[in-house]
Amino acid sequence: MYRHFISHVSRQHLFPTGQQVLLAVSGGVDSVVLAHLMHSAGYPFAIAHCNFHLRPGDCDRDEAFVKALAADYGVPFHVAQFDTHAYAASHRQSIEEAARRLRYDWFRQLCSLHGYPAILTAHHRDDSAETFFINLLRGTGLSGLHGILPVHGLVVRPLLPFGRSQIEEYARLHGLQHVEDVTNSSLLYRRNQVRHRLLPLLRQLQPSADDALATTISNLQHVEQLYTALLAPLRQHLVDKRPDGSISVSLRFDQLGSLLPNPSPDLCSQLLFEMLRPYGFNASTVSDIMGCKTPGRRFLSATHQALLDRETLILMPLDADAAHPLPSLSVDTLPASSSGIDYRHLPPNQALFDADTLSQPLSLRHWCPSDRFQPLGMAHGSQLLSDFFSDHKYSIIDKQRQLLLVDADDRILWIVGRRTAHPFRVTPSSRTLLLVTVG
Image 1 (tube, helix red, strand yellow):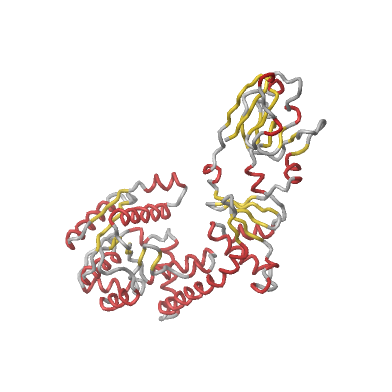
Image 2 (cartoon, one colour):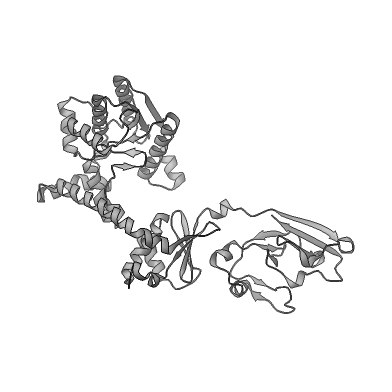
């Protein structure tokens, strides 16, 4: 195993062997074997250990063990203490997801602080097979079936060619001590069910199941690379970043021409899934989008919203409103007799009103579907604001971002930058004016 490990690292150029890398060590047999291999090969490394405080007593035991291991090898030791339950609750995540997020965020901070070029973890071939089946049962796309990648950003997994039995045998032959996580045997977790029930059954049915799975996962990685390359021209044709920061995705799959002639509905759905997957949308939501005929319908992922605008989807981050807070609003009161303002030639961010026709204070807000408005020049009646938007060719995003100036009674005084309201106009009989400036 040692010679195979050295050869694999060298052949694949997994990490710079002359620089100190960061090794994630839990204290389990996998990470202990990785540390021993790294030390035996003479590769410089530091050790990082996370104490998630999930198993009273055991977590502190594990930390002490890994600290002693780092001292035995004479390498730097980093440790972080996490309140994982509190983090999971505040971020509405599972304990497993919270621990993963905390762990890798901290590892990346260490790399930035100390200049480590890579983070080495002890994931191995059985972990990759387990991930394959977990994602298969979840119904993920092709990217979920490539198992665990050997390199992903800063994270490197040099033990992927080796199975759990090989790692355990290496530890036995070298007399390596390690600690056991009791949760690894609990069948409450999906991964453990795959590990302790599904994979042993497959090995009974087919003794070469491990090799066959590894070959299949490797083939799927290559297919995914080809698939991604073939998607690139389709993505370029369908996806467009707009000047306002939003992203439009065309639903006109029938206009792809020679890129994808006569696509079936199922193929269109799969193509849309690939266009939206980078923004967190799953297959179920994509199916809802494909079946929707109602413009203005809103669909959500964990990070983005998608708005259906005829034959286009408009994507925006969910925190877009937080990133673009309402602009400032200033109101100046002026006597009409001495204002000297030509209200017909004001800049787009200013408007003038008869102060006696409205109720203060004034404020800005976004529109609601029931809003009505009496545009300047309409002497009688009113119209739905949505009809005004349609008449002026507003997109879904334009509607969402349009600001309204309203008075204390929530009457619309101004579609900011576009049109003021007739009842609040300046007339020859106006005595006091309000000059409103937005931004």
